[in-house]
Image (cartoon, rainbow over all chains, first blue to last red; front, top):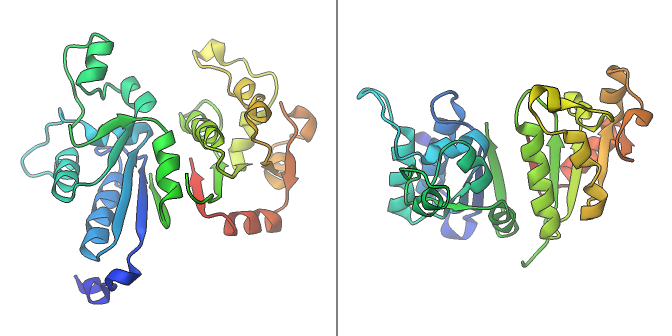
Length: 142
Length: 121
């Protein structure tokens, strides 16, 4: 990738918040966000927080199954978050409407399964606002 | 929270075709709770969100206009409506649920350019 030649020095590193509104299967936005996040880290920038909102919460589904020759976007997010220790928040009101629940939410609503990758936390919009106040840039996908 | 950075929220969708309108409003409320400087801008079909007398119960939705009437109670006063979008849709200020600043193209461009963050749903 040629753009890596422009890798900034650590002093030029910026803090980014990514707001992901796009669902993983029905639009390109989630894939673009994932590739953007990978590139940011490769170039030495910091990710303050990933915030999944609206249909974007489906990116945190641990129950997605993809054909073998297609990328599993939620699994790729999970791997990226784990490998880099990123802060990843899934909006609770978007999530429970779409069946994305962690074990606590599953118990609270008496559901039979948890569906949210443990690498993401179910949280509120306050965590988006908080991340913005600590960031240099915010990009919105979808 | 440390430094205050301004957010421009751009509402550009009609109220009930997608959840964009509600999700924009939810961000506005969250920003207000954290006392984050906020511009709430209605443009394009987004101006329909502010039209008074909505009755979406018939289509199993909650009225968006009624929620927007409460913006002032949350201390959200920087509400802007793009004048051209309103006029193009045969609407005037008298059709709206709350008072808003009508804004022209140039002023809108400046407002967005001066914002730290722009969220467009």
